[in-house]
Image (cartoon, rainbow, N blue to C red; front, side, top):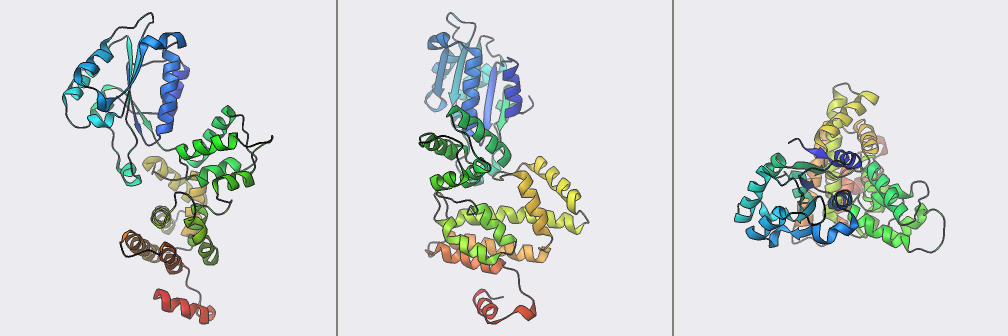
Length: 372
């Protein structure tokens, strides 16, 4: 069966459509939980759920239990709903998986089976994740991809309304960026915001105080300063970004590395003659094709890549990439304890080289340090 998106699933639920078997996979576990609740609400009335709703972890099921769960008839209802989580435990061949495979060949018309696979544990694995092809072929497979920055802000606004919260201009966008577009992190911050006294929209300043990250001091702001040639600003942000919850030097290099990949793509098309709207259109097409993990607002990302490409020739991008790789290796090494020093050195290595006339004593001191 063809893969579907979360939007496809929502439209189907809005039309009242129910499939026999669903397979949920992808990186957004929060959205999977929301979708499960929506399916349960559509399939069962509240009074029908005591006897017709089962939610279990796949890891603890034996073959007999699975067979009973999916083949039991509804009791005083038109259907049953069975939700099986953590089905990544069945990636390897097992007797329980054999029972599932047999069921997929002839699912019960009286049961809605929802198979939920957890998101990969690390960012590296998220980028390389592939769904279970047997389940994709035997179920309605829904890919819960990471939302882009604009959609995360919309999700924040929607969830905030459930808490009775509204946001002032740019506040929701800053919350998304400060939380690195992590819906789980954002959800916990929304719960804190809901407990704040007072009325009226939550301001940008209040969001900054709550999450400990002021506007203009996110890791994305640091990357923009580095690649825009604003070296003094980038250096000033290093310590502030490193002090933020969940942040470290390796993560800063990862975010910078992703930006360098996008910059390299933009420069390649720039050198081929694509400028302005033409370049933006090409980059948007590539993003839609690849849908890379970890990007924020696509419009902002494309504008940044296009702007940076004007001042970053291929040779400089290659040098910057090599410097980022060396910094990553140093940060992961057992001998390095000064993350701030490594990141500061990286910023200096990526700084634009001044013209000969502007090369004063300060530049010569920096050149002696960085080898440039």
